[in-house]
Amino acid sequence: MFLIIENISKNFGFDSKANLVLDNVNLLIDKGEFVCLVGPSGCGKSTLLNIIAGLESASCGRIILNGSVVRDAGIDRAVMFQEPALFPWLTVIDNVEFGMKMAGIKREERKRRAMKYLKMVHLTKFKDSYIHQLSGGMRQRVALARALAINSEVLLMDEPFSALDSQTRNILQLELQRIWIDTKKTIVFVTHNIEEAVVLADRVVVMSTNPGRVRKEFKIELSRPRIPESPDVTYYVRKITDELREEVEKVARDEYDGGWNVEKDLFLSNADSNMGIGL
Image (cartoon, rainbow, N blue to C red; front, side, top):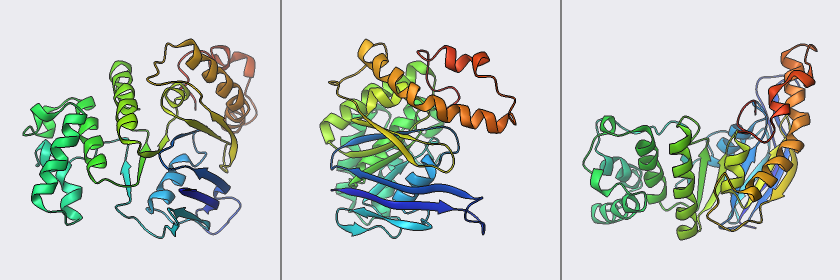
């Protein structure tokens, strides 16, 4: 197995039970697989992604990538966050080259790779532009090109499209599907949006509420490219929503101190709408 998440638990502070965020998470991911993690807010999705990236350490358990135990961050894992985290004083192409430069890749090779991936995200015309001259969607495409240019074995994506308007998000979802088909990159993608997970993933992993555990996995057996309006996508969205309903109710009960009324919740009565709300 290419990526092994083995018995991962994580707690913050001294009280291991009160501050337990992840509890004995186990997951196997094949090389070239696209896996989405979904679950209620606070279930530890982003924490798990950071542990895989080597940006945080687990309290127990281990991450094994291609036969080696992950101990810290490395260029074999590229991370793309919700915010593009680009340098405003650098041009687009310089931003894309930055990670390669830090890795010691020669200038000619950096330029070749940067242009390759800028072409892949349709931004070659903007290679000499500065970040303030780009739209939000274009900035995320620059961040994606930068992550791909490092040529890492795994691409870790933490809600990269959540701050974008729905039209731009749909465009980038299609672009990412095309890029995945072309590169067969192993991708672990965190999202609150069930519809987005179904559109993108080979497999959707549903996590339980705090502490986070793997509740159920759904294999998405649909051809690509996928669009949100597809009846087949809606079918899987409903199945995953039904699985998550109990977890969402748990979060709501905790937040409302027992005053939660399921029958009055719009999320539950509109399960076939945009599934990003409340998760």
